[in-house]
Every structure is written in C-alpha cells, then in structure tokens.
Image: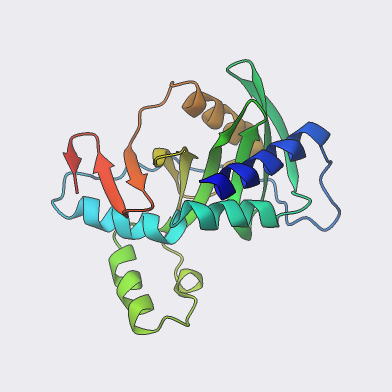
Length: 202
C-alpha cells in the first residue's frame, strides 16, 4: 500500500506541473465510440466478465506501474469535477488507453482499459494458460474498453465502450463517474480476482 501511495502521489505531481503533450505521442482523435450494454442475465456472465477484467485490470500494482512508466505522459487536456482539476492522459497503444487523476485525490485513478469482450475472454484466458508466452490480446478484434475508478479496495466499473471515446466524451463520462452520476455496473477486486454485480456476487 505504501508503494502504491508513493506512485500515485508522484503522478499527482505530474498534474501540478501540467506538462504539455510530447512530440511523438501516440495520439489520435476518435470520432465516436458506442456505449455497450452487456447482457448480464446469463448464469455465466460474472465468470466471463471476470475473465475480461483480469486481462484489462489485473493487479493495481501493475496498473500503477503502467501509469508511472508513461513519462512524460501524453496530455489530453483537463476537466473539473468535485471542485478539483483532473488531468487526462494516455496513449492508444500503451498501458491504460486513457487515465485521469487529481492532485486532490491521488489515490483514486480513473482509467479506460482495453480488454476482450466477455464472450471471448474465457477462451482467450485458457489459450494464455496453455501458451503463456503469446500475446493473446493482440490476436482478437473482439475488444471493449471499460471505464473504471481504481480506489484502495477495488475497481468500480461505470461504462463499457466498443472503442476509445473522443476526448470530449471521455472527459464528460469521467466527470459523471467521479461525481456519482453513473451507476456502478460491476466491482472488481483485483487482489482476489472476484467480480461483484449489482444483484449477484461471484
């Protein structure tokens, strides 16, 4: 926990200096992204979603490392939420596609992470177990992007998209998530690798 706090505190300092986007950043303006409505009625949905989240939001320590490794990070501007300024960063092909953090709440990181769709994730998970050296994530186009807030106990998932949203949409949805305007679709405990849905628990 101490290491995690140290890393996130360092990230909050990145916002304080407000470094501009660097030349050579892998940045593309995405025209549109569709919000996905996943069918959670099936008895195997929680297990399938768990497999997806393991790929995209595995260990919070790994996520923090990915964020800290983006130095200097590619900036996508900022937005205001809960009277605090959040810097939006990220590259399409590195670590979390997008992430936002506020110096006021450095232990709560908002992330947009790529992962396989639930219907394909279990098979990919088994494929990875059988061949741990292969990049299974690169071998599928059946992807989705989950918008989540990482806190001290878990990831709370608020949106699923079929692509990376535009910066304007990303800022708006992140603002809605952090201010409680979006419903929690799932809670993922990355340490225990468990998924809790609004009406059921795996």
